[in-house]
Picture (cartoon, rainbow, N blue to C red):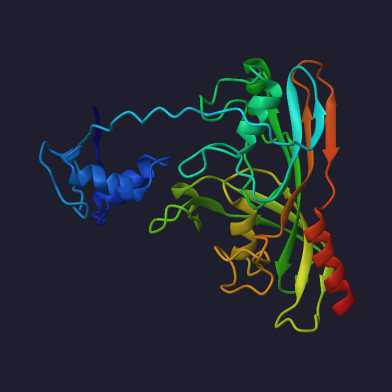
Amino acid sequence: MTSIIFHNTDNEKIRLDSYLSEQFEDMSRSRIQGLIKDGMITVNGKTVKTGYNLIDGDIIDTNIPEPEEISIEAEDIPLDIVYEDDDVIVVNKPKDMVVHPASGHYSGTLVNALMYHCKNSLSGINGELRPGIVHRIDKDTTGLIIACKNDKAHNSIAEQLAVHSIDREYIALCYGNIKEDSGTVNAALARNKTDRKLISVCREDEGKHAVTHYTVLERYPKVQGMSMPLSLVKCRLETGRTHQIRVHMSHIGHPLAGDEAYGIKKDPLNGHGQYLHAAVLGFIHPTTGEKLRFEAPLPDYFEDTLNRLRRLS
């Protein structure tokens, strides 16, 4: 059992389920509500409703059951391997592939494929569900991702990610005519308070620092059959937060094409998810100290769309 003492000096109304959603980021709000209803979460030793408004000094006791053990199987799934040695493997991830097993996706993931290809040579720091995984990209995002084969390599890459020394460049197709040739979005990010699957811009003291630098590569100002122009941009991540590019570009009024979560509902270019590709990945090799840099070309569907936009502009 874990006890949390709630502090609130602003007299702001904060619901129990909302507060715990912030404390337990890996747990869905619906599961938290279920635990409250089942009496597994109490306040001051008493059962309460999910919408209970917390008071300064409340003691929240949580008795969260251990997650059910799930067996993750190695699967013979083809991988587009860009680089591999005894420490790391760099893969060009295809669209529609989930990086690691989670609720609803226990097979067909990059981890299942890596387990088959690498056998027992994957770092174990991130647990049984995420062997070798040190960073992620979304299911619908294509491009380069690194996995680690031992804990030494994992710690090295994780440290480079923490100090923002890894080079990560993405290509994104965005709605709107971005007039400036380049710019920077500096906006903190946090879990959306009403929908835990989404990320929102927030005050710096309420979320995680996040910075995205972007450069316009091409503009499609007047595309026949489209109600608005589009811009092709290169985004360089200074930080690497969940959905960072998608949220940041939407925040400045240029959501990614195909991204109905943060952009246009009934998007005419949807069908492939968001147009986002991890094109460049650069890092210091954990053993040799050599600076490595890899590039992955745009996938065919992305290139085909760009060629169509060029013809119609």
